[in-house]
Length: 346
Image (cartoon, rainbow, N blue to C red):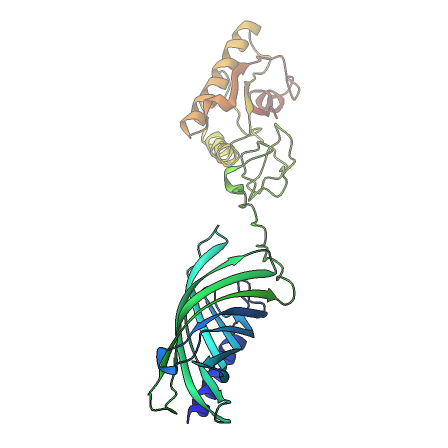
């Protein structure tokens, strides 16, 4: 029964170690060498003895280690120096380490279970018994491969060969641990991508269309720009905005044309135009100049009344009879010359 219990303990410890996943701590296997003193229970009537052993272990989490150790102590029966009582122990020990970041040493608590083989040379026989132990200690890093450990505690040897139910043996030991293999490469976090720029709040070419929606990011200043940021061919034809003879009032057909012009100007807020008025050559030149100015003013007022920003309108400018587009010798030609134009400035 005791041997089965020991086997289960060993298998459990090894399973814990093997199931440890990739860690952010040093989970290399290490081998250990131990030397110390065993202060035997008075009921044994044996001398204290040196204890020495070897082991193998590893950290299975950031705070827990598991070791499998084999140690031996040779005691003598008082007062018979030639009568020896040899103790050979195989054990599994778990340790909980109180590790603090930035410090290369730390305390720990230990608990173990195993089997001790007792050999009595004075009667020429021996037996194996369950053993458990409790202890505490300190461990320190010497370098990336070597640690040292000192520990003290009590071992309970459930040996009833000579009538006692168990023996309480005290121990103190020092161990050196040698890690196998190299430290795992540090995990390097992937670089954090800089936050994406908010293109909706930028307009690099200053055309009034944000960078997200601008399909022509290199448009030139002063161009007529569409909603996609690209230059658009644009002509505002006011040739139908004519006036009756010696009049500066808008005709119904002229109102329709000016409504369309206002829609275009409101759709393209970058567009800037000159409001220019003209007359035919009938009448005094000074009179015609004033008449053309009044006609330009009528168109100017109409457009601003339709929501066109006055800052986008140059003028109104009257040119009188100085810029005819047809002859003034016919009725039809004079009618065409009595006009107002929107001249695109950009």
